[in-house]
Image (cartoon, rainbow, N blue to C red):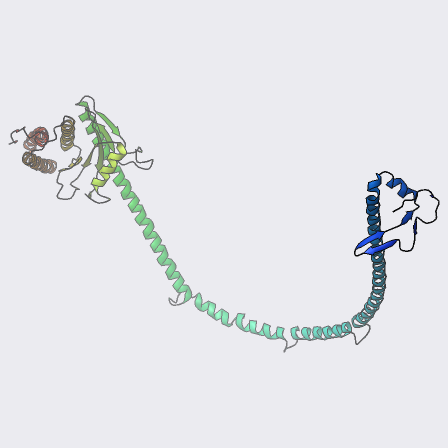
Length: 428
């Protein structure tokens, strides 16, 4: 390959002799080629002689690729231009056709809606509405006997007129003289309901009055018990009496069970319930034993005592009953059996504190039986004292004797229960 840079003014950049460019398969062979373009000579002059042929081949490849791409781009541009012209022509034709169709539709619609044209839809509708309006007015005209309005007025007159059906039914319904008619039944029902309401109100008033009387009796009895307990406390140094019936306890703000809390000199705390009712149940959720358990929890006590003004306990309890750490006594406020119960609790607490926990069962049962008998005898004697006017001094002497025996027997019973070696003689 020869590179000619001597004639920069040559009109052709390439000169080819016959047979200069040949092909061997996909390889292009250039045997003798002169390039008169000075820029080519300057470019190849930048390389060493052994690299000039390689750089020239690379430059020819790049040029061929550029020429090919340019030809394809020209072809695509021509096709795009042709498609654009076709689309513009089709759009123009479509616009013209659509405009003709719209105009034709507008003219047709105007013809159908034009009221001046008798055959148009609007003209026919107006005529039909006018006929319907006239027919409706005729059906509603009250001056025409066959109109709907006239027939309606006649029917209403028959129903609501002075002698109409409604008037007759109302007279029958509101006739209070007939018991089987509506007003008669209503009056009778109202009278019955008022009578029932009156009975309920009167009954509630009576119950409220009875409850107030019962509450007043209970409060008065509590006052007596408080006075008795404080008198008893004065005879024992260190006793504390608290009236807790209106105070909340450990079970919550709504729990006021436990009318009194008594602290004995040795520190034993006793919860006391006071009853002034005709009947006091023993067991179950509403029984006094369960209530005393709650009183102990509420007042943080280890013993509980119930004082009943009357013989309200079941028959098996009697006037003095012991159920574990719960005692039940009948005491009208005189205080003897209450003092017996408190002495029992104090002695039992002392025995438990000193560890005297052995029990002579026989001696305990004997003395408990004797204690119950004496308590029952004491209660009967009190009744005699309250009801009889004669022999008053004799009964009082017997009561004083029984009171001393009861108080002494409590100590003896506790010793017998907690100390088997103690063999105290039975009280005669």
